[in-house]
Image (cartoon, rainbow, N blue to C red; front, side):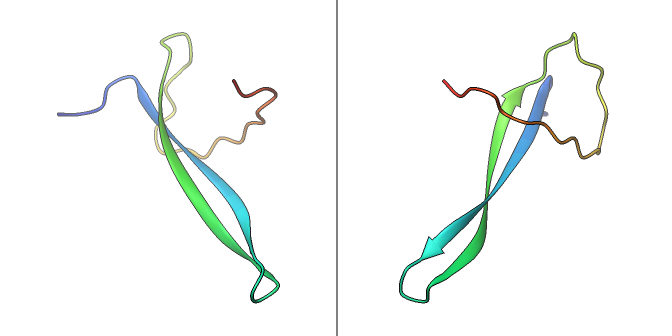
Length: 54
């Protein structure tokens, strides 16, 4: 079954490891609904900023 009207958002962040006093890169993928009011742009990287998270 194919995901229709769905976009995958990848969230990159840094995680601090106290033992080594360093940061490591991590990522989290999240599937979200793609509203029909937005044009579909396949296989493109889109940058956006989250103003408020509920």
